[in-house]
Every structure is written in structure tokens, then in C-alpha cells.
Image 1 (tube, rainbow over the protein chains, first blue to last red):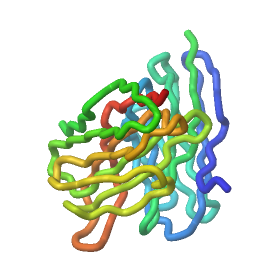
Image 2: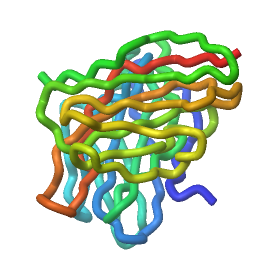
Image 3: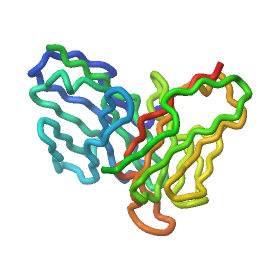
Image 4: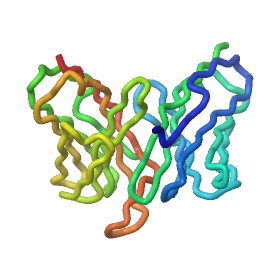
Length: 109
Length: 119
């Protein structure tokens, strides 16, 4: 059984659209929820969320955590072709870490 | 800037060969990790290390071993490579959240990956 589930698996949008990516996780020994962007090779870190309801923001990207409902969302506004990537979320616990399989976002001009 | 480097970008080996994948980080990080990434399965943790000579199994340690003789270097070893170990291997490092036995998986910095093909 997957511990971290991301949806949708794949998404195709036009430039300028706003997208919302979802990540649901398990509660066992929850410590943090991480978001990464993976373009061609190595994932690069986007956000770490530990507290519920506090939005983290970086340019057109923002993310929020809901510890009651056990999910996080990653929003990207005014998407650009450079946002095309696989977005990974990961849950960390006291002694473990689990990645989701990712959402592949394709932004077409 | 944090830099994590991996010894090879592409590697082709034969079944039964011993394979060494090297990872070096230059930020004095205590934590280092080895993952493999396969389509449909995402990133899966093989082993991690939170200090020199310390290691712990991740989710899929079978068929792998690791070595951490120096803080900056974490090696992944395939004692006898098999075709089902064909994969992209990613190394990562991070600072610890606390000290001593407290381990953390905060922001991780990834290397560029090694695509290993076992024939």
C-alpha cells in the first residue's frame, strides 16, 4: 500500500493556466512534507511544510499543508513552459521517508 | 552552493559484476542517502547514513550494501549486479535536525544521478 499518493499522475495545461497538485500521506510519526521538482535529472527542493495552514510561497509557486485531512497541495499560477517537470512530494517521519510517484506536469505554449 | 556529485552519469555492467557507485558532497552534511528511481515506482530509499561508519537500511536494501568511511563520501555497492538493478540511482545529502541519534530528512540536495544498465 502506497504511503504517499499524488494526483493527478499526469497533467497537461496551457501557458498561463493555474494548476493544483495534490499529495496525501499517512500520519505515522509525521515530521514534515516535502515538495521537489524534477526536470531531467536530480530533484530540486521546493518547500518543506511542518505546520498546518501556513502557506509557503516562492514566486508563482505556493504550498500548504492540512494535517487534519493529511494532505498537501502545490499551486502554480500563470504556468510557463519551464514549469514542465515531475513534481514529487515526500513524507518524512521519525525514522523514515517516503516519496510519492510524482505528478508529471506538461505546460504547452 | 551545495554540490553533490556522483562518479558516473551512465554505467553499463554485466550480470554478476561488482559495481561501485560513488557520491561526494561538499557541504559537511551528516546525512547521506541512496535512492533508486524507476518508472511508476518513484524514488525508493535503499540505504542512508547519518554519520561516518553509520548506516541504516531503507525500504529496498536487498542486493545492496554501502560504505561511509569519510563524511563527504557515501558509496553504494552492488556485490553481484543483476538485471533487475537496472535503474537510475540518485544520491542525496542533508543537514541533521538535531544531534546524536536524532535523524532528520529535511531539505535534501540531490546529485545528478547515475543511470545503471545491467546486461
